[in-house]
Figure 1 (cartoon, rainbow, N blue to C red):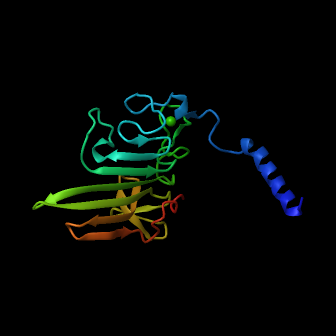
Figure 2: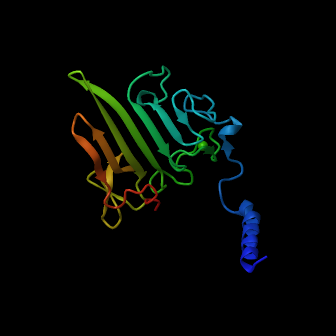
Figure 3: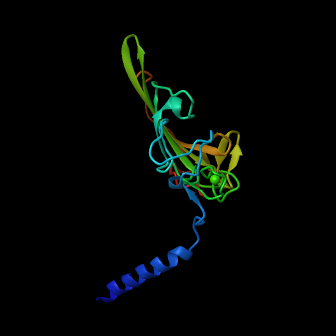
Length: 202
Ligand SMILES: [Ca+2]
């Protein structure tokens, strides 16, 4: 055994031993697999895609735009919507034991939580018998704890534009739009501070 191999083996062992004692989600966190977590209507959430298009375990939505609000009567046609989000936006665990998936766990509100969400919409429309396709992609992040809302635009503590305010505590940091019929193509907005989803934790 070379010195390096031995060192690596010791490192692996140290990590294996120390992980259970390290800080992390409490062991009492309920999981989707256990079946005790419910949606807002009180129905149990399960793993895999549900009838609306949510996969809460994988933190994904792939369905019709008209179904993202989980309507009682499913929409069967219309524009498509894909969403992705991170743990801070909507966790796949219930660690505060209220029977619901956690939002901004460990933080009083979304602001400063590092939460992010992406939406990708696609659709088509007809004008004079011709079909046009369009798509819209947007990245949304929770504003950092020290961000300031200046006239409807979040700014960093240093005064750099993060992006337009949306839903109170959030900022739009990137928009990409394509619409053949309207002649719209490509990046429509890119945050001067950063278009990176993981850039706004603090
Ligand atoms: Ca919860």
